[in-house]
Picture 1 (cartoon, each protein chain N blue to C red):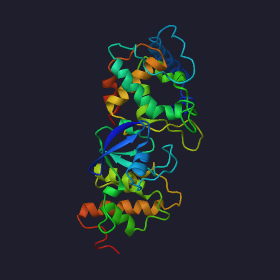
Picture 2 (cartoon, each protein chain N blue to C red):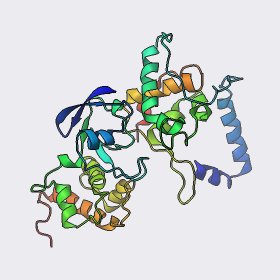
Picture 3 (cartoon, one colour):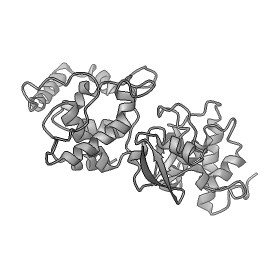
Length: 162
Length: 164
């Protein structure tokens, strides 16, 4: 993405304005005043009282979060844990479209060549499609407190296309 | 602690470990399969690479709870000292190892490549092996070993035949 920003810096300002206008029409679909992110700290396990239609998905998603993500994203889990971004602050969780989060989970984050930047390993080969969708659904509700994404399975399936 | 039934190199093992235990620790500490190595523990070096079904994964990042019924393959499953697999033989013939710490991971990463692309170009070998680091700097020998194994598989010859 850094390369995109660098390259767009050389684009015609009118093109950049047109793109900004188009992106804005898309982002306006987000809730006008998104609820505040949950307080920092560990993401919660779904409680016994969570008996929604997708309660089992939330428990499965939490298990993936606890075992695969928390080691880096949550303080106090182990040596070095908590060094990564607290997921309540992860922009991708608040996006009306789940594609960014699914892409991040699957492919991680690659810093640009020769420059220090945020890095994350990809989990495409470690997590199954179902585990990836469960994790995204859990993070959406318990990390961001947002309404569920629809068609997560489709998003994961499409993300696998080269 | 939970009990997991893991399929490793064709055999099923029951292990009692915490759900977030990395697959690498289970392989090394519970099953005494010490081929995969602990390098960085952060998914940055590739020394712990193993196959999970048909993909190479960094086993230090893979929690045992996520493995399920998928098949794990480690370097121990490719061959033995007296009967090395094609890749193992090619690595020996190219003397690709210096200290050897990265080699099991390199071989499993190459296994993924040759299973998906039996006749890779040199550029494809380079690109595919990129996640795995060798701090001795024997990358050139490692790349030659993967090339040798690919050629051997292609011609049907055992690696080493007809080559100096």
